[in-house]
Length: 378
Image 1 (cartoon, rainbow, N blue to C red):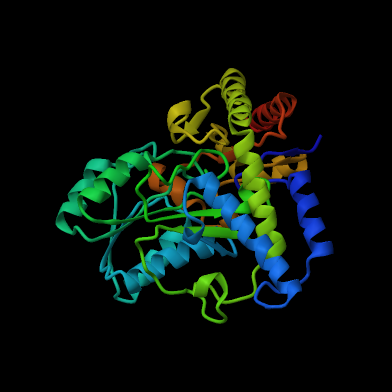
Image 2 (image 1 turned 90 degrees about the vertical axis):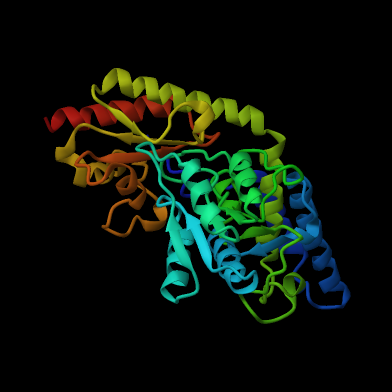
């Protein structure tokens, strides 16, 4: 049996997304910047996709900018806010994605900002009182807090964070890469300056994403070149990717509730199965449904003897999962997120992340495999 439980790293492409992308590839090859009919045709396709995304997020099409993915979108929001919005102070959490953390650390190294790291508890929850305290000392601050953590699944209440940020005139950016396409983002209600999306996290193609820039923020490009993206990002648009992104987001919004309850049910089923079969199993981060991303379950296992070999052993058994964030799976440093909440734990941790294509039979197989691995090494 082959089981793919690494959907937080990337998701399989939706057949309908492949169809619209292929169709566009076959029929529309023009450069959207060209003013002849071939170009204009493709320009229309790009703008239609932008409108689709804006409508789903209840934003204006002029606030959506296409990028190569979530990392570029995060970088653009952070680097340009600091350079263009008069920012000298930033606040983030120790469990942000490296696209945020490393970018902010680099700005501090260059002497452009002072960076404060907000306190979290042992489950990875953000201390909102600490945020308020930090903002009261430096009101005009850049705050970057992700909507849901990609490794442990913790959800942050963006409405509350936004209210605190407004009180102190702070600029708020949220890495929403893991929740885009899985939760409703209503930008007519949520007062936020920047959010990000990456198509491959919701059954779209890799190499394409977007940055939402609230209309009141005027920033400069991160990538210079031609006048693409209304002068905000040089480089010929990834047209097929953009078409795939819009279609994937549209499909995920259309059936969001149905998929959400199906996947939440899978996650609950796996939690119970693990508790039943593996005494002393623990879970990293929040696991209650209202405070946790329904696609992610981070499991801490008691069998430390197999820690080094766990993912490898699962892989040999035909199970794809990850030890932390896939974006750093090649590095031996271990997960900065787990380190921030647990310190140096000897227990091996595995992140299982689900999609609508997974089944309970797969969960049974995975739990049985883990049980055997732990028993054989005792």
